[in-house]
Image (cartoon, rainbow, N blue to C red; front, side, top):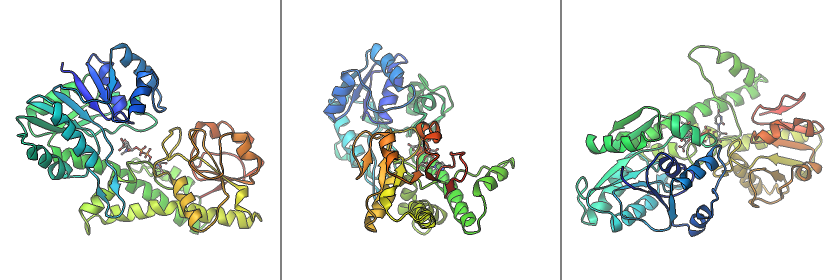
Length: 408
Ligand code: SAJ
């Protein structure tokens, strides 16, 4: 089996490199962030995920190497960021294009570059193929392109890396099957080989489907709130129907995937992506909806000073350390716009100071607040409801079973 150079050692690239190395494949992990590479070479992982440290130890034992350099080999897996430009909702493919350029500087003839990064439909045609041809390479001879989007769930990545089915998009069945064999070294689920544009679209469609379903739950919570109905009881009972699976309302949709990918379709198919756009607007309205609930509760209980309110949870969802696009940060931005500063914040997973009035000790955080807003259902809060029973509680995640808890 060929040596593989995994380029980009973030939330996706690192677990992928470790899984390949732990299953008998020679792997070199490359990242332009020297600090990150040094951390890995010092024997430390760079983020928290169930099972990551064990996989890291197994990969190190198998001889995985980490470097800032690209190496000359015949298979590259590229997992670099694909941010989107908020203004025009278009993808920024520059990181992918730059990685492919670096591959071309070192790769032998006939190498395969596998792009795992989530890209909007048509990105590889619009940005990757031209840069390869502009450098005098013939696609399908000098360099093969494959798109293999991942679908692992942050918070359960290592398990899903092994058990989720995979999609391999390639220009030829032969190359697709060759890359399928590599992923089959650690993936025990079905691996589907298709064309590149189909692979690009399925990935974005999967996340868009989830965004729309979350938006339905969020719109339902607004409707029920307006008519004093219990949305959670309605969802609980409705989901007993064999073909109904309503998701959970929340304070908004965060993360760098579900809150981003649907915008690719809105940006690329204006006038057609209507439900998709509406769902995005509903989900993006939830942080302000929660602020409205906080305001109502403060008035109802005579809390005049917003510094008596504490936001529990800065990450975008439970038991992860990722704050990208998190509802809490969207709320803080909104409060700043309305000059409502002073709210206290705390998250056990966020060690760095990223907000004003951020606490790093749960007890300290609790000391001077009257209303705690549960924005992220970390295991810590679920195990410590007894420590907040003397507070007013707004539970945006419906996890607290204490009496008199407010919900969104
Ligand atoms: N959320 C709700 N209500 C729900 C479910 C989620 O409000 O019922 C919120 C979460 O709190 C979070 C956001 O939505 O803020 C997204 O969380 P998530 O757990 O639904 O998904 P992600 O973003 O962590 O991971 C998704 C997954 N995609 C799908 O489930 C279709 C994962 O499989 C992908 O690999 C990942 O995006 C990605 O990287 O694309």
